[in-house]
Length: 128
Image (cartoon, rainbow, N blue to C red; front, side, top):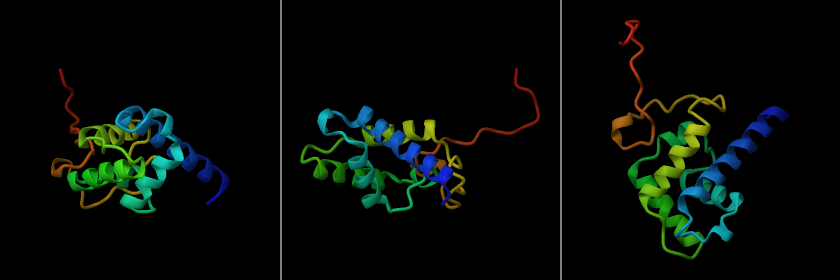
């Protein structure tokens, strides 16, 4: 990984942590909301290869596990699935799928409970 890729990765990690702080505090105490802690919990829950594509592929069960892991890590009540999903959605708004050069997860359908936004039609007809 070259310097620019490392910098972009660090920016992605920072954005993810900021989004989690904004969305899951409370019940996570704000003063405990360090970016590195959120990153560690996400990696330990969904795997070390965290990318926007991987985040978009999280299922409702993954979101529940992530919330439970956050509650355990911070020794508090787990944030709701809605809060965790908001953190992921906000992260994806800042770092969309493909923004780190990764490929989309091929087996993800937006209607399967993933956090991915549905694809819009690319019809050549102009909408009125």
